[in-house]
Every structure is written in structure tokens, then in C-alpha cells.
Image (cartoon, rainbow, N blue to C red; front, top):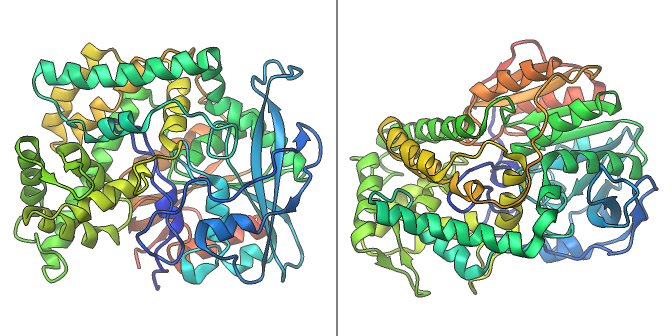
Length: 524
């Protein structure tokens, strides 16, 4: 069963809790390694109020600015919908603008409705995702069977990119956060990293105050129902990746009877608390790295660090703590930047070759490969500016989290997890610090049954680093109507990676035919 070309979904849909936040950058669908421009293309700023039909206008400039062209045979229209800042006060004049794009195939026939997308993050742009997926299966996009039957609707959730974006972290603080020691050993070093996280949190609190709680997942899920109504669908058909599974699961609990079909790929386990979720990710990344080392040793011609992959990576980080390699833009490849590059490379199996070469080059005094990987993850441009991806990421994660650990608890877990997960444990413990200091009130998402919802397909990948496979059954069981579909592959998320997965998901989305119970699709 042939593997499709590199999936832009796997590159977009990510949930990684690091010292800077969590999500993966966007890539052009031609498989290049250049990050796409942040917030590429405009969306009309005037639009419909919640409950009204969306007012669409042509926006061919969006794909032009993102990837340099529109997809052949596709049309692009954009709209905005105004939603209450707080759905507990639906009649308030305080609103956010939610931006959407609608992509239609000129060969569309027997239209079913809209397929709404979310790429994950939180902080990922659904508009960007929809554009990339419109370029078709040869470039890792959606199958023609899907684009011939559905309008493809991407939206930027509240606070993200084009939708009343939250921006409260300076570029300098972003650089400092990513460069910081991912595992500070001395108390003084720990306190320095903690102080930076507190500075960032305080700055966001000073700028946004009571608004911070409004960026929660539950508020965004309620927005989704307003968008469903605005596009004219009586029921929602949804495809969510990574964090998008949490958003979809929350919607299912709030609006179970408004669902036609939900596919949740790369499951977040909503029943885990904040500490449990972070440890689960540490375990997942450690497993993925072990898979990388096995591949590396078996493919020495593609892996210049094949003699000792784990040793090469850990040595690179240890040396960077004392004498980091200088990079051409004035930065240094610190252990923090190396860790970010390592995380970035593990999202797809295709990233393994790039990682191996980057670590080898770093040993030779060349930091370009590892810094490129890190900058792609961070959505850092060549001139040192950032999108608002990580601002939104922190705002959503921390609004959702009412059980963030204290700094003292983080310090204790850092030591414990270092012993259990040698590369990823301590950094993932440190990654909880931003919410430790977050000033806003919290608005945790629900974690229960979606009573009254139709069957929901929950897709899991056995080698997924960011949303480990064990989460798949947990989310399906929590919802009560979930059915697990498994891909025995590597990387983050599965659809549409192989013909087996694609056929099963497409059959469900189009005909509402559930995949065979217990279906496990092979890696290739």
C-alpha cells in the first residue's frame, strides 16, 4: 500500500508543550523546507453577526500570498463572523471576528455540505490548512473524492492569526524562551527560566486582563456552532487534527445533536490533567526518538550519526551548554534551540534524515540545519519576527488549565521525569511553567460523554510522538460513541497517509460508513 507524499497535515497539526508553547509551523505543499508566511493573505474585516449567514467574497490573494498560486480548479472565498467574546453573555456588544475561507472545486457534484477543518496547536491556522489541502493528493492534500463532494472550510479560531489575534510576547522574549536551557540543573538556572516565563505571563496579563479567559477551548467550540450555522449546514462535518481533536470533542459534548460526522485524528486525552498530559507527551517523544535511533542504525547511508544516534544528540546538547555553535544571524545554537529542532524533526518520519544531517553538521561547526528546523517549528522569519502562534498557544492552553503545577512541583517533576525520559522528560516538565504564572481566570473544557452524538471516528498512529497512540482509545471511550481507527505508522496524525486510512476516513465522511471495527492500517 503506497505511502503518499509528505502530508502537510502532519506538519500543521501539532500539540507540543515546550518552554515556548506548542504547535508546528506551516509548510508549503510542494514539500519545500521553507516556512510559509504567517497570516498570508487578507480576509474581509466586515462580516456577519453570530446566527446570520456568512457574506462571502472572493479571496484568491490568500493562496497567492501563502504559496504563490491558487490550486487548479478551485475557487476561494472568505468571510468573517462576529461572535460574543464570552458566550455566557451572548448579547454583549464585545465581539471577536472569526475569519473563514471556503474552497470549492469547480468539478464539485452531489454536494454534501461543508467539511470544517482545524489543524491543531492550539494556535494553528485553519485557513492556511484549508489552502494547503486544496492542492490535492499528489501534494499531500485532500482526495478528490472529498473535494468533489464538500466545500472545504477552514477557520482561524479566536485569538489565532486572522481572528482577533492575541499578540503579547515580544520577538526578543520569544528568542530568549526558545534559546533557554531546556533542563536547567542548578536552582539559579531554573529561577532564570522561571523569571522569563513569569515576565511573559505578566505582559500578556497587563495587555489583555480579563479577556484572557475568553480564549478557552469551550468558547472556541461554541464559535464553531456559529460558523456551522453561518455556512448553512444543518449539521457539522468536521476533520480535526491533534489539538483539533480536543476542540471537536468539546463541540461533541456541547452540541451532540448538531453533528453529521466527526473525524478526530491524533487524539488529545481530555480526561488527563495537565501534569498527566505533559508526562504522556514526554513518553511519546521518547518512544518516537527510540524509533528514530532504530531507523538510523539500520540506514547508515542516510544517517551520518548511525554509530550512536542517541549519543550524538545528547552530546550536541551537552556541548551547546558550554560552547554553543555560532549561527550566521548572530544567534547561537544553544541546547534550547537544538531541543526545538529535535522536536520539530520528530513529527514526520521524513524529518529523521534532516535531523541526522543537522546533528552531524553541528558537530562540524555548522548550525544551519538545526536552526532551520527550530525556526520552522517556531514560525520565526529570517528577520527575527514571529507570528502570533505561540501567543495564542499559551492563551488557549492556560485558559483551559485550572490545575497548573507550582514552580516547586515543576522543579520536582523535572528531576523525576529526567530519570524516566532522559531527553524529553525534564523539558516537558519545564514546559508547564508558563501556565504556572498565567494571570487569567481559567475555563476548563468538559471531559465526558457526548450523549446523543452519532458515531465519531478517532484515528491514532502507533508511532505518534505528540499525541501518543494510547490517547486514541481513551478519547473514544470518553465520548461514548467513538470508534478507533489505527495506523501502524510513524509521525503525528494519519490521514491521508496511506490508501487504507484514506479509504476508511473518506467512506465515513461521504457515506457515513464506519470503518471496520478494530481496523489497523499498515505503515506502508
